[in-house]
Amino acid sequence: MPLLALLIIPVAIIIFVIAVYNSLAAKKANVQNAFAGIDVQLKKRCDLVPNLVSSVKAYMKHEAGTLEKLTELRTRAAAATDPAERISLDKELSGALKNVFVQVEAYPDLKASANVEQLQRSLNEIEEQISASRRAYNSAVTDYNLAIRIFPNNLLAGMFGFTETTLFEAAPEERTNPNVGDLFNK
Amino acid sequence: MKDPEPDRSTDGRSRPIIAGLNESLAELRELRDRTLKSALSISSVIVAVTVLLSLGAVVVSGDYLAFVLVPGIILAVAVYTTMMREVKLKYKKLVIPAMLKEIDPGLAYNPDGYIPKEDFRRSKIFSQSADSYHGEDLVCGSYKGIPVRFSELKVQEKHSDGKNTSYHTFFDGVFMIADFNKDFKYSHWVLPDSAEAAFGQVFGNFLQKLSLPGRGHMTRMEDPSFEKKFVVYTEDDVEARYILTPKLMHTMLKLSERFRKGASRIGFAFMNSNVYIAIPIEGGRDLFEMPSRGDMGEETARKTMEELKEILSVFDVMELDLRLWSKEHPYSGRR
Image (cartoon, rainbow over all chains, first blue to last red; front, side, top):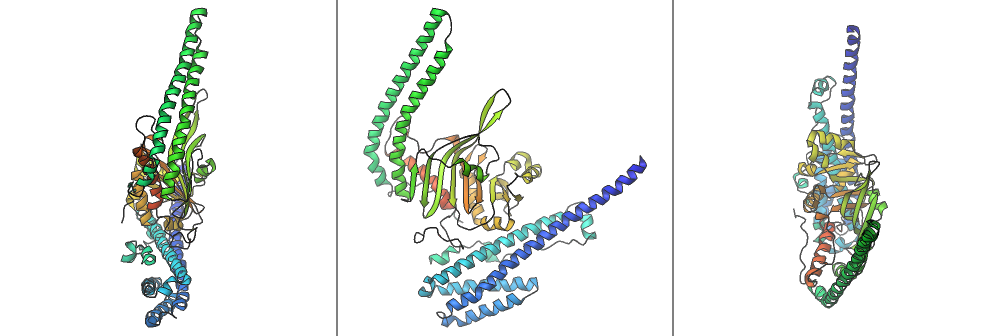
């Protein structure tokens, strides 16, 4: 009987450790996948910029500076490899894009063009997808961080090098859930 | 954020159409009262004859002829219901198309039509089996340029313990299907959180995670008040959040407060680029019905108009006609 106990206890401990490790590793993989999801959307937004610039530059001669800044931001964002730098540049790019569409309002011909409307629609779509990816990422991070914190996972998490991940902070204007419809209705 | 309150105004715009129906409604009221009288008389005669036959049988042979009495009463009820049904149908055919024309000429009405069982089943909003399935008052067409369909439904599941069979109603209300304003590939469900309400957060959460086969997996949204009322199942986490924006979640919460019937709450499914909505109606009352007695005029028509607007307001508050994303308006030039 004691021999059996001696055998069962270590086996049970090993199974438990494997289960905790696998569960934490799966949650960490979810976090990484979710981050990759954001990255895909950010790239899509970068790809939209050249198309937008070529569609509007003929009309917006007075705003050449705005368009140049947009192109430069796009080049830097596309080349950035550090995630923190990428995110920061992307916030700037997002602001610059919104700025361009606000300026489009001053050119009725341009605003009415099907191409610009299509671009606006694509931008809205990507913004919505980015917001969804961020929320999915935050949900995966919350799930992962909680799994690391709870007992007895917290005893093993440190041992296996699982550390808490920070949430994706949305820019203040993104938290207010703006109504992009206003851009069409103006 | 604007709360999705129904547009209850039967304002000046709808007054002329209601006033235009006044004469027809007065005629219909006369017809209803006449039919009611005849239906009651015929039914009474049938009941009286069967009662006399039964009593006669008791006197003559000493046998109690229940086999005459029961079918007699059933026949009387059937005669009454059939006669009144014709008048009720006339009311619906007179009032509802006129109201719909006023609200949106793109909408059509079929009093006997209903959402097909296949659509109801495919939505997977309910896990029960639809063994008895009835419906009426199908409205379909385009509302503000968006393809929509809805009808009243009463759906029951059969329970049998070997000897007795009974039917349990698990949905009695309005079932709606509409073209959603965003394109999506996977299926998602937003269902009333009955498990968490009944068993508390910990055990309720465990039960929710079990889900149904073919309903994806459970995912948690960041809004605690939304999570308290609903449970979300999805086939794709990112797409679920693409559909369930904070604004839409707020709207769904408001709708859940507005439409409730006992423990039943509103449920949603998003699939095939459509949104499916199951709305329980308080008290299981029949919508768009003619009053069986009393006055029938402007007030009655106005009530029917309000009921129609209340149902259609669900599409309004969900902003299904707002097409800002890659999915364009189904009918160009109608935005």
